[in-house]
Image (cartoon, rainbow, N blue to C red; front, side, top):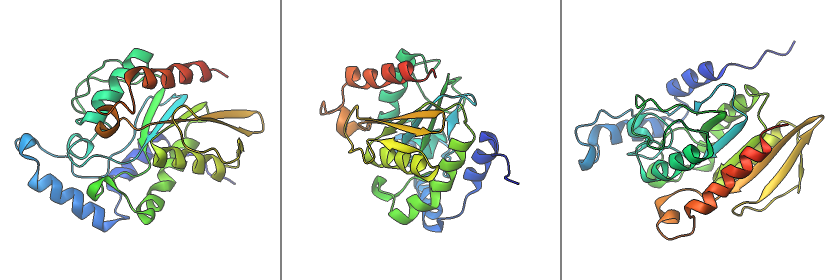
Length: 234
């Protein structure tokens, strides 16, 4: 008999305690110890970072990995760095977040109909998780997908996030159209399994490199979440 999916709360607890990649646990702890001068007085999280979610979410965002002095400091995805400063205002404008500014785990932020997670859960050196590290984390993303049977839209933030989205859908037996979508901002792929339909959307990552150079603008990002709102109803 197949076991029922674990709840998001139980998955998150497992993520925080995860020791699958000792080298990453050592790196995140070292960053938390040495800190960044601008955050010298902050108490760093320094552990794997769980998803941030509304437990009834129909929209999932999948990013790359925690930032060394962002999520690895605050303990919440996309919180405390430039990427989050660009993401949360867009989510607020689209109705997915209760406020535009994300400062820390205790800032009162709530998500509506949305879960934010990542392909990797520990901050990696140079923000580049290895293939082995991504594989070690993948089961958590699968579990989060399984815990959300009402999920209708998956947004991949950056090429690695979008690849992780497609891998989840393939792993769970969904047929994709197109079968092998190439990454590009606003690209969509429709995944079907029986009567269930999930749409995968690709977005440029809201990194400072992209937002400061105009590769990703606020109107471009807003269109992603406008589309997610259109698609989330069955």
